Image (cartoon, rainbow, N blue to C red; front, side, top):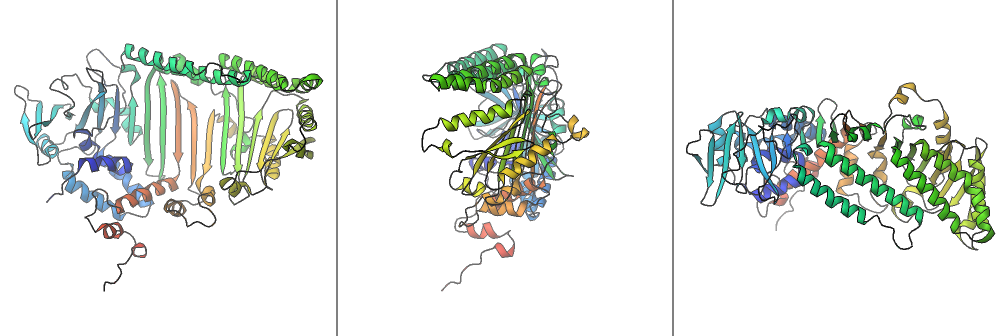
Length: 611
């Protein structure tokens, strides 16, 4: 006898158990309150076809089942696949009548009353009669709609029913939130509409900006602009430079939002597991028309190679790189910021000292202004070390070449130290304490915060400042920081690999999870469950995570790539959820037995003898 299903419980499991829960998207989508949407439009909207505002799409039930196999095998829990299959057979009627090899999901339309979206689920049909019986779940009654061979109602009691339309060999379904007119649309063929998404992603969501009514977009844009601009007014006692930078950033976001709303076509979020590499990826993509200002905005991001290219291939715990071309408007905003920052900085010093400081710092700010006018933002940060107290952070910013830059930085620090109040931290600065390539290095004591900071950098840490004519560098950490700074400066100046130099990525982030393992727990703490799972999942050759921001022909794509250790970690997390009772809670009083019954014998707690 099939076990009874609790739809609220099922909805909770969807939230708690991402990938395994997608096996029931179709069924959740057609039950009151629990619809789930679909993704990705490939066709251009026409007057005849009523395209949705957004979709969430799964490539197919079979593809999700195959990817679940990869995930559980990576976690060494292949035993759970039998339980998932058993659950599908008993609870989801083995998806009988549903085609397991074609896309399924949910489309979102605007409700006639504008209060929220109307959700239309779509399911591929292998056998119409069996599919309707599966949706009825043994509790509903399938009733053909009079005069319509393609319409059915599935009645649950007196007050609840699912309305069904059969078209394109798909079932379109609307829950009680709709009415008899909800299916009176010229729906697109789901398989054609989601061709791109189904071929690229296992699961994907798409907001189809091009189908949103123009008036609704303008109302949204006007509201967001008003809210954002209201927060860009200069605040009381706010320095001019800080205000300029904050306003420049805010206006940049307003301008980007305007381009996305008025010229964007799709906003896509998709995920995929690569069965061959046993890796995973998540993409976020914004697309406009090919020659739109939105597309050109992102295409201007890339163009010049980064000065720090040789460091990108250097093994490290964390690496962040930005090599961006700025638009003309952005360049002017940064020029204004640096000019304001110079005035604010020198205004804090009074009398003759102010004039002296202004003379000293003029070449520094001129280099920054020139860099802004050139419009190439080139910066780099790298974290090295994977042991307690041995972590060091090194960062650098490329500036317009200025021969006086190292000398002026030294003079600025000397001036600040000489004019500092007795007992202040500046009086302890150790200037000119070392040399790199004939230019001085300065050490500024700056201890790390307690707990996690000291676990990373040690109880005694310093900030190191260094400049050569091309780059302003800094490093932070304990005894390893100065060595890390020297290594980075020398490696950055070395000739770059021509192949890597051609790979001009505007923004990228790379890290290795295993290197952070030591920081997850305190010295005297018992390792957490999550820490134990990470330790079991990550090896030195499978723990990489990379985020890359790249322009496309018509927009931008942000891709997060996970090596196989993350797939194993995800599988172990989901396995823990299954052991704790998914897909149905364990019988009362039997939770411990249910949670342990599929674990290895060494992890199963034996019952204590009874008296």
